[in-house]
Length: 72
Picture 1 (tube, helix red, strand yellow):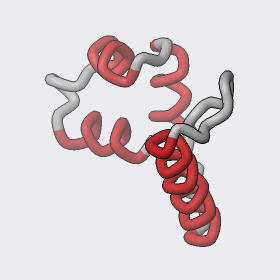
Picture 2 (cartoon, one colour):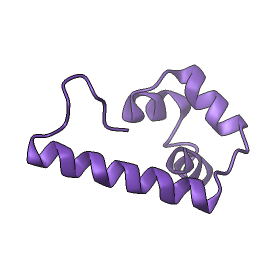
Picture 3 (spheres, rainbow, N blue to C red):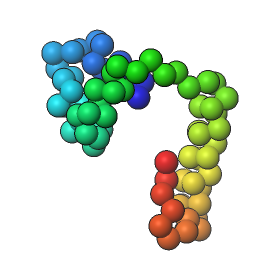
């Protein structure tokens, strides 16, 4: 979310809602809501998500990621 906001804020004529939507593979409505939202995750939340993501990547690389489990 932060990348979408940053790109649009710094280069709004280049990073339009349509281009952001295609680049991040989300709907234009999702991009609109992200740009409108002021949600900022806590540092703890960010660290928890990062730890979970690293664990899932480790499982994926070792072949232990269960079928149907998505990496977030």
